[in-house]
Length: 350
Ligand code: SF4
Image (cartoon, rainbow, N blue to C red; front, side, top):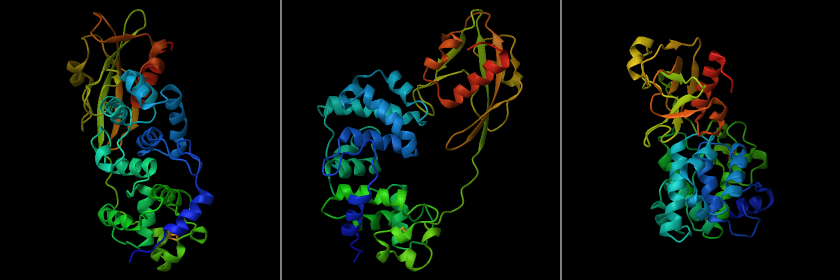
């Protein structure tokens, strides 16, 4: 029999729940649009980072229909700084699907939610539970940790994930499953924290096998991560006589899909020499490399970019942007770093 932690956890939640911008007051149903938007924003980002973005999105697009009607570029621009632009593109596609296929109302079941773009198993469970009080088991990183400790699971992540999910599902109660899901998340975020869990304050400590075995703080165990591979590239900072710089759009699919970029070579495992990179340049010109380089870390690799600069002779195809207007473009963080480096290196005004 799984431990019946729901009654104690729910009464703890009623007293200690976090006040989050997307949460309805106690006793009121959460707005599915708020839940969905916050869950997409929260993937791999912290609550503190998401708060201002969430408020800004709601101010601008207060309903899913309003978000669906927004130009994609505006959504990508507002998403800047949250990273993972594929997520913003899916966010927009999902809003459109809800508006067009479902009359502006989110499906209430996990199965229905899973048919929408960008909604995977986790988000479907979160929206079904938190917005519609369905008995879905919601397992984010916080909940994984709580479950691994409650059941003293010693096998390392990620291999033990399946078992964590199975056990988490056995804990979900029929009554108030949405609050239970949020209570588990809050417990992980505020009490059962990664380092030094505050077991003395924990409402479910009597059932915690990790605590009883004296290994709670070591769980979940993890296999050591492999170092990120390193990639190299050269960005081409091409300016016109009037000071405008050449930008272009990245392909819709793939990393930073559809975002605006400073043209560059492909990013590869070996460093580029300037000579080797020149066939990739937007036009033949007197290219010279700026001293120094730009570094950026993506989830799956680190990137080192050199920046080559030249004055345009022919006016290559692309979007010519005055440097003073660069801040209005949907530039991902790595491209902002490249612009900063180029502006500093060439002494151009912003
Ligand atoms: Fe986490 Fe400690 Fe509570 Fe166990 S007793 S669930 S380790 S806070």
